[in-house]
Amino acid sequence: MASQEVPEKELVLLKTRPGVLVRFFQKSRDRWKEKCQQVRGQLKALLVRIRDLERSRAAWRTRAEQHEQELRQLQQELAQLQCAAAAAPQEPEQKPSHSFPRRRCRGTSFRRSRSTLS
Image 1 (cartoon, rainbow, N blue to C red):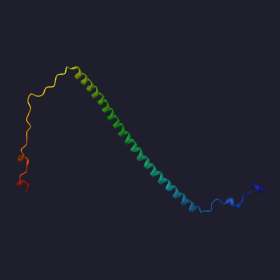
Image 2: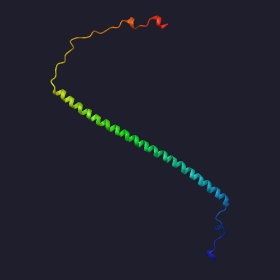
Image 3: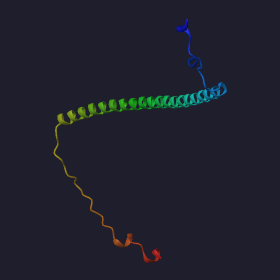
Image 4: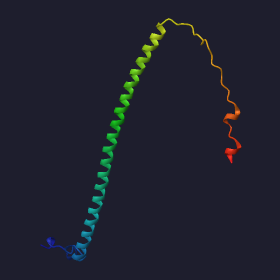
């Protein structure tokens, strides 16, 4: 039976007093809980941000698609108008029969008088 006996050194598992260990494990648990709460808060903030960004992106995508559709319609309309203009007989350009003389401003009417500057 000598082979089954355990030496005394192996029987002593803890050298630290149980009260000290309890305080250590409580502090460790409290630090872990605090860290977990911080990470949960960060996770929630990031999830909210992702949700907002997805909504914004969807709104911008819808807006861009509407603008693309409008652009296609305008391009079709332009092509139709260009075809109609090319098919129509062209008239020579006529200069207007009258021309309006250029008005020249008299310098005195736009200048400030010395009495208003003082």
